[in-house]
Length: 167
Image (tube, rainbow, N blue to C red; front, side, top):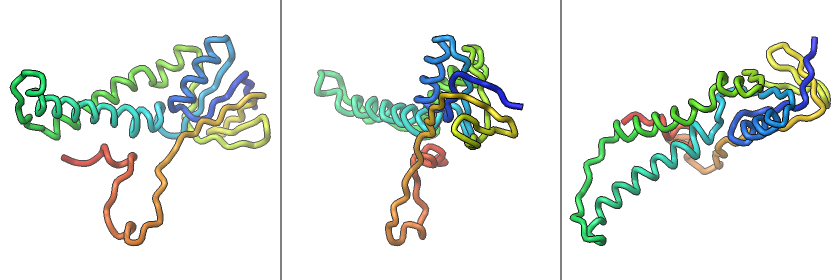
């Protein structure tokens, strides 16, 4: 059995969420497919956590250089566990508006799984065949690990692992 949609969006990162929401607002029957985490790397490992970290660094810098503005400068004591908690809470705050339940309330069917094209108008996800004349493939990005001699012999981080560092 197959199901027909006006639009199928593969990838529920920022681009996929935006496209699905826009089509839904226009009255289209939309399916949004995600194989990992809704929100994609922007929410979980990119834009949101990195901007939260940059804000923390800016506050610390402002404290150190406040004397430029006639305010006594202080050397802040940084609690890295609290920094990490703040970043995590910022990410979760953004995700609250992207959960499958919230997206579904906007009239978009959220399907968690990996999409495989069967033909130009059909995909399969979790054994379901889904048909549409229109697909948007917004599968996001992943880090490119450069072939640097010796890199494979050491521990290194990418945007996908950096924010999981233990303090």
